[in-house]
Amino acid sequence: MKTIRHWIDGTAATGASTRTLPVRDPATGAEQARVLAAEPADVDAAVAAAARAFESWGDSSLTRRTRVMFRLRELLTAHENDLARTIASEHGKTVEDARGEVVRGREVVEYACGIISALKGGYSDQISTGVDAFDFRQPLGVVAGITPFNFPIMVPLWMHPIAIACGNTFVLKPSERDPSASGLVAELYAEAGLPDGVFNVVHGDKTAVDAVLDHPGIAAVSFVGSTPIARYVHERGTAAGKRVQALGGAKNHAVVLPDADLDYTADHLTAAAFGSAGQRCMAISAAVAVGDAADALLPVLAEKAKAVKVGPGLEPGNDMGPVITAEARDRVASYVESGAAQGAVTVVDGRGLTVPGHEQGFFIGPSILDRVTPDMDVYTTEVFGPLLVVLRAADLDEAIDLVNANPYGNGTAIFTGDGEAARRFQRRVKVGMIGVNVPIPVPMSHYSFGGWKDSLFGDTHIHGPEGVRFYTRAKAVTARWPHVDRSVEAAFNFPTHG
Image (cartoon, rainbow, N blue to C red; front, side, top):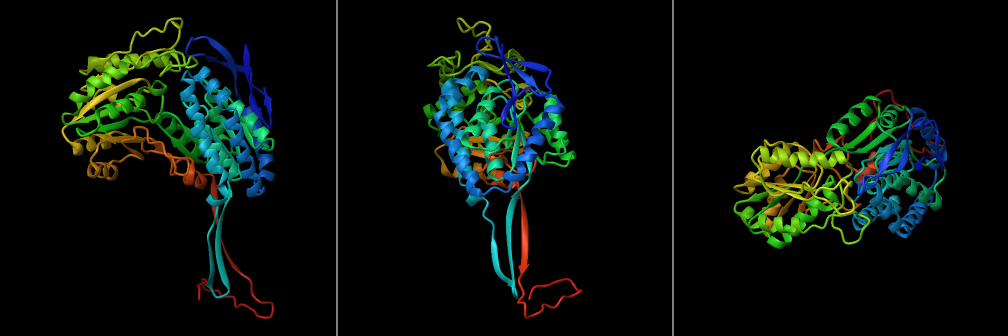
């Protein structure tokens, strides 16, 4: 049985770990590897290596840092298929879906290649007689990331390339459910010329998470996961004096107006709800049909949901793979049942799906519930699986009020051909990321990703310009260089400019 080890100070390491955790193939249910579970001593070792590396990396030139990023981008491209297949084998998503994840993560590396522009400061000449002022940003030191199972390469790539290009060193605690991609990225960093200790990986469970949050040598923590854990990470990390950005859960709505193109909308809702088995923080899990839109939309949606080809992610031609665990499968099934029990209409029922030859896999088919109301458990909970609920609203204003009343504010979309309605929606809705006829509006790397309300704890979004601000802090300098033959009078009163 393969054992997946930590990556500390440029090498695969066992460290103090005495426990291991199972890594399963969701398509078969079989255990395919074991991953080390870090003890606090392992986190100590990773932080110590990162602190040593920061002494030189923090003072390294921007040119040197960007050269590493350019080389990493090349290696991510060259190993795209290997990375995608590794993700598919441990997560369960299709290889093509995993390949898209690699590409979107690589875009952040491309942004990091231009970090010189992102770190430019300002300069003001002669703000006072003989006085100039300027500012610049410096790295924090050792920073860390705690990342979820659903994007084992993309979400970490939202963090560490920006942090490292800014001059920090990094400790990553990836999900223990699909850990191998992080080890592969560590090897690619080494091949790209990144010095030992700049990027480290410690695997494990809550023991490792708490050790990261409590460690006095870590200056900042980035997190993506569920809202309860995001709140916990933010509270514990900030109590320890750290900067924390903690991205939480979602209940992403797509508002469908009667004038929306029917086939286009149904195609995109199907892909957004059931792609990656609905295990995306930006998946559409709630559709709000306005006016008579539902009566036309639902039959088309049902037909497309039933046509989704479900099977192992490593097999070509499948649209959707399994969910990550048996518990996740059973949880999704329980919400299909509870929704119907509370009055929703079952349009498509994915329970009981069996994939021939993979009867022990964690499969559940796409499901759709209609006439869901805001008080139902299936609506108030982030189900995180291939389940789309449909609510009905009389008009756009009612639909916007429904979206705004939801405690989550990660992403939302509107499907319409009416520009005024779209503009009203994007201005009034209280959500961080908005799509207009785009169901999964994940910003490109030169913008920043993040939600509102219970979908974000902390002040900054992730990657892009806000990522740069999170991983650096500003210094403002006021400078005077008096002539040697002329004195500058000192004053006991508070200095003023003149």
